Amino acid sequence: MPTMDAGLEHIIPVPTTGTEAQDEPLLIRALRREPVERVPVWFMRQAGRSLPEYRELRTRGSLLELCETPELAAEVTMQPVRRHGVDAAILFSDIMLPLHAIGVGVDIVPGIGPVIEHPIRDASGLSRIRQFEPEEDAPYVTETVRRLVAELPVPLIGFTGAPFTLASYLVEGGPSKTQALTKAMMLGQPELWRELLNRLADIGAASLRAQVNAGARAVQIFDSWMGSLSAADYREHVAPSVRRLLDQIEDLGVPRILFGLGTNHMLEEMATSGAEAVGLDWRTPLGIGGARLGPDVALQGNLDPSVCLCPWDVVESRTVAVLEQAPERGHVFNLGHGVLPETPPETLTRIVELVRERSMVTA
Ligand code: CP3
Image (tube, rainbow, N blue to C red; front, side, top):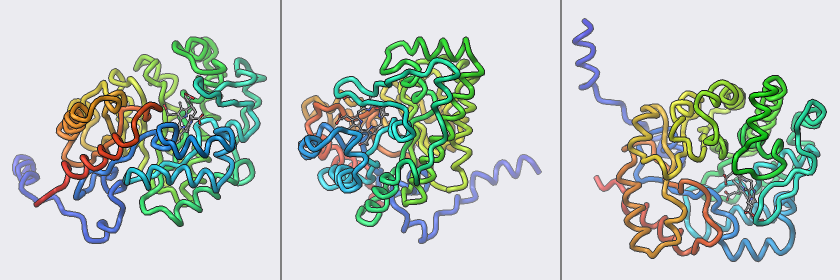
């Protein structure tokens, strides 16, 4: 009887996960919304300029050169794990690396970001975006991942740029506040746009597949600039390419995290992407975000990175506030965007300790 069935659902205990699940790393269990003994924590851009040991290594070469040297890329990836004791490592690379590797002239200019030698604005530009073959084009990435998984005490997160965010750099030629040329292509040359995004989705999927095959245990799709679109434009002109990317790697069985900045007006679009987890920035409280995203999605975030520049009592109360807003299951603590270069490293270490202490299940 329908009423009885509905009533019973409440009293049948939800099966607890077996012992084999306990062998899975904390991060993976949290991303799958399984029970955890405490909230895992890592930071976007945890490797990089906030660390003196990174700045020291960086004097040996450009960012892309570091990425192309497995020994150095692996070392930089491990630095924050050693220093802060975070629960995950993120591969040291850049969202532009596969594009650089297929011969699109990309320079990553310190203090500015990616700059494209010949921006993509028409069909002849598009013809330069060929498929990425990880083993031939960037064997150093796979080599870096292999080295890391042999040494790391925590899972490695692989990543890619999402089609829209990559397209915005390619079309604008560099960072842009308005994404005006990108939107003009999207609305004015929809066929060219669709083909560009499909190619970028296929590049992202190939890149993630190689990282996972080499040992990455979770992946993050950075759609950093998706928030510059309306929900309707995102749904019509961008979401299909994100689904195309995510669908191509579904068979790998690793949790997929979709991150975007300023996405409060389009959380429903993120919820229907197929990703197991969504990274929120600080504008959306986790409680509200969780309610809107629904019970099937894990949440990652979302301390404002600027808070890390404050005195400890402010950092402490804001960190605790994030934990209090978080859903009981399926939370990975992170910042709402990347670590700012001026962040004192000690603050990040203390946040890791605080999250551990405060989120511990003491039953
Ligand atoms: O620790 C980690 O998170 C792993 C490494 C990582 C880098 N870039 C290294 C890097 C990751 C995950 C990225 C992703 C990335 N790259 C994104 C998505 C995340 C985000 O911040 O929204 C974007 C948009 C890029 C493109 C990019 N590359 C930008 C905007 C910049 C900053 C330019 C600047 O100097 O301010 C870069 C350069 C970059 N990528 C650095 C690092 C450590 C800066 C350091 C350097 O020049 O040594």
